Length: 269
Image 1 (cartoon, rainbow, N blue to C red):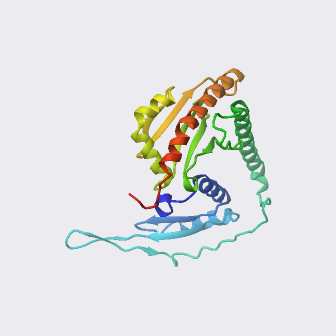
Image 2: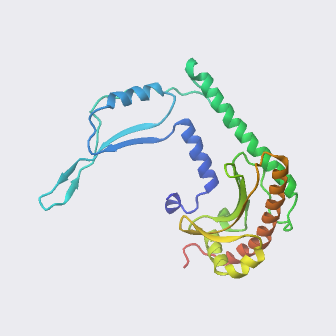
Image 3: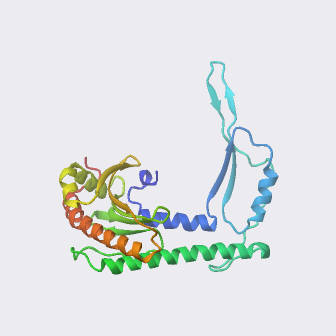
């Protein structure tokens, strides 16, 4: 949906910005219904209890009228006078927060868990990149250890529109790699060109690489489940397999992406 508005949007930057703004409560909250009359006082009390959040609230009523011919007429209106909702927003410098003493301990515990998870992810990817060491393709840029569940190996397409996503699924102890691209971009054109040659590409990728459909788009992926990745032996085995898969994906797909986008022109069929 976002790419339909802006095809050049950077997925990683967008996800980071979205997560950051949701964490800070910066969003527009719309309550939409065919009749909004009661409960506004409770909503006002809730807003006051979360004054540190910066979200805006809108109440939209959509009354539906049945017409003589059986059709339905919907007349939306914003309810500005149902009740007066007073909000107090406290602006604080970055790094500071207003806390309820009774809930402070719980919030610190949650924040500590998030920090610990991010650090665990960073250590996991650092260990993997140390195992990867170097790739056959010396021109392939290797990313830095990330604090989330994936890495992005950028491929040679305009606007950073094509990359390999290397991921870890903590719940299933699964690791894998797949080809990614922005919609309506040079990267997607390269993806289609590679899919058209899947017979040859599959043989070159070897392993258990598959061509599947995800969100109505083709995806070239290879993944494998191991034992608990917290255990040294399982982790070592997973890293060795993933390093080989990433190296092979780079060797096979990187030159194909470069060739496919050589004559790319935005908007061309």
